[in-house]
Image (tube, rainbow over all chains, first blue to last red; front, side):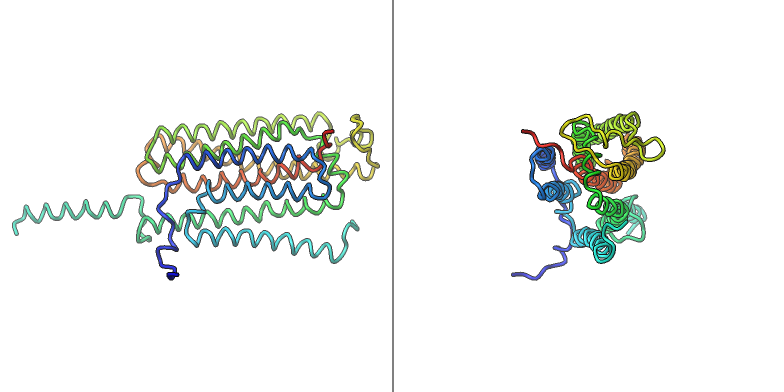
Amino acid sequence: MSHPTLEDAHAEPHIVGPKIYGLILLALLCLTALTTGIAFVNLGVFSPIVALAIATIKMVLVILFFMHVKYSSRLVKLTVGAGFFTFLVLITMTLSDYISRAWGLW
Amino acid sequence: MDSQTVAIRQQAEIEHHEHEHPPYLRHHFETVEQQKEAVSFGMWLFLLTEIMFFGGLFMAYLLYRNWYYDAFVSASNTLGIGLGTTNTAVLILSSFTMAMGVYCAEMRNKRGLLISLSATILLGLVFLGIKTIEYHEKYTEHHIPGASFSIEDFTHPTDKRDVALAPDMAQHAQIFFFLYFAMTGMHALHMIIGISILFALLYKASKDAYTKGHTSTIDNFGLYWHFVDIVWIFLFPLLYLISRHPLH
């Protein structure tokens, strides 16, 4: 396996074409229909999990293809990852604060 | 070498350098590629601050939905699912037209770029129009939190499938609507800012600003627009699809 070269770290000089954009558009619209339709099915405790999972898939498609991150440098990919990480810290640390102390006592 | 040869050589050098240093390459960057990368990186850092900005509201939503679930379900069911789904499709379509705009700029297709930017503006305005209708609905139904809020729809629901809430839980529906207006309102503000910038981009694009190799502005505005789309992609299921009545 060859060592990662300086070239790998750079963005591919790649122009994303209308075909890919069209496919992603179709996928996003289908997922939207799915998330609305499945809201009428009683999934109990899994309802929010399924809804968020579908939303996450849509977000990943937008980020990778519409925002070109799939074709971007490692720096940009790392930056996007850092954003997610920081958001997760916001959620988990705030939740752990509430859960460990006065959950629902307000 | 005579002076004419020197002059011709100097002219060739100048043209060669202009090719290497296009007018939009700032002097603190070595290459156009480096400049593009730096600008893109900066834009992503801004989007990260936006993630944290909306993140706070999402955290508040997460908490109160768990504490006052029944009120959130009842309140969410007063939102029109048809309009919400339509708006989601409208925004996704606008992300597509924006991405096509980036493609047109890269392919130096000025007419395509103008059409794409115009379509994005139009779809953005349609989104805001539908939002206005929805907000007005909330106003007439007395669901805007505050002095005019009425718990009647929640303590005595007209739809037989709806569960009647106790008055104190019904009051918590105000928290849902506060988050609804705060989150969709902040989102709408981002849309308005985006559409305003789009008008400016449309004008500059008509003057060939983005179809001569310098596509950074369009690329990075695209990033902003897609981000606003992603925020809505999460807002929609969280606000509109909490627990719709199962179809039998």
